[in-house]
Amino acid sequence: MILFFNPRSATTKPRIPLSILALMRMFPPEMTILVDGNLIGDPVPVLEHYLDTVTGLRYCAITVMPGPQLQVAIRVSRSLKQKYPHVIIIWGGYFASFHYHVILESGWVDYVIRGPGEQTLVELIHALEDNGPLAEIPGLIRKEQGTVIRNADRTLVQPDDLPRMSWDRLDLTPYLSTTFLGSKTINYHSSTGCPYPCTFCAVNELSGRSWKPESVERTLAELAWLYEQYDYNALEFHDNNFFISESRVREIASGLISFQIAWWGEGSIATMLQYKQETWSMLRRSGLKMVFTGAESGSEQHLAALQKQGVSPATILEFARVCLAYDIVPEFSFMLGTGTDPDKEFAQTRSLIDQIKRLNKQSIIVLYLFSPVALTPHAVTLMGTDFSFPSTLEEWEDASWREFDLRRGSYAPWLPAGYVRKFRNFETVLNARFPAVSNIKMKSWARTWLPRFASWRYRTKVYALPIELKLLLHWAQYQRPEEAGL
Image 1: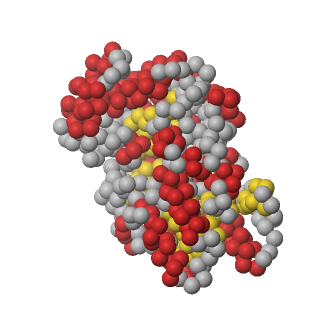
Image 2: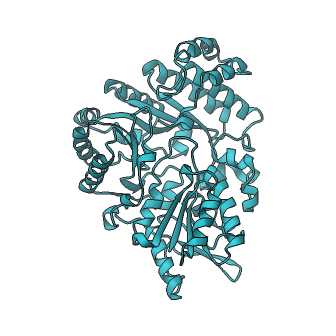
Image 3: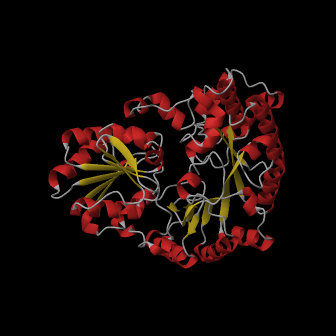
């Protein structure tokens, strides 16, 4: 029997733990127990209760993303391994896939699954139950005689070749959140991977730049079943890149029209600008309300270095214009601190953001400071020897690394002195000057007064010490777009 644990990742608006459900569907219901840390307080007593009372509970599988989940996963794994040394603890997820050495060296985790985990976990459990060989299980990482051994990577499989999701093993009612999209928002994953070569991204590293979509028929059937059961009025597609195939997107959008819902997805600027006008019209008719996309930089040079194929300041502006024409809100993500001349990139990005806002005021700007999940070739080239990740899980527990993972930290030795402070100050001024339309909890007065107070700073580029704006944002209960979500 397997105890699946989803560590807490949010304090509000929990999302359906799709990664855990994807694993649970591979096993009979009587073999699985789920504990979702987003719905409970301290998870340790709950997990210990199951381990103390359920006969045959031998495995604990934990999904681990960088940030809050990592902090919880470390504490839980250490506690469980000390009290129940016979329980086999297995980690998967983005953090585990890249930092497996430090995980296995801790002694608190027995196995790591890298990349897609459904088939790897099944094969691992069978091998352990039958004393079978582990060396030929793709995607498995283990430690033998003091040496960390990484098997061959697991390639992505077609979603339709896997069992349907085990929705009936979890009451989804607590996950129907109020968002900018609607009062009962649900999340769904209809494809895996991404074919694009962006040098900073961890997705193409794990997917081998492949993309495997669920069939339109299965996607719509799953969404229809969920609609019948929970009557949701808003939908988030959590695909790494939902809009890759225009024909597939158009078919799904056509099927969603009868649902009469609002929905959101993530896509590529270059890809979506190739869409026909009738496709854009279909998207709007189907309820598409917002699109998240990676603009990344206002520098043509840096976009080329990041291999953002087909993305330039000109195409970013064109995307803002097209979204305005179809009354769809674009979310532009910018990632600063990625180039060899960060101050010049900052100025170019600031200029592009200004042009976006003049063209389409509804545009949402999400600012990130470059914080790599792994030392990709781009990260190594950029940061050189000035940067290193923690060498133990105990070090990863430090609050500064949690902030780093959330792109909120100040540790960026590859950047000039004062850059991080300038970045944060600009972010404060930008958020006050242009409060995100998706921030539904902000005080009503703030939409009028915040832009007025921030206008002179934004216009004159005086970002230093925006104390008055920080106070106003606090009183307004403003949440940054990446923090508040939709």
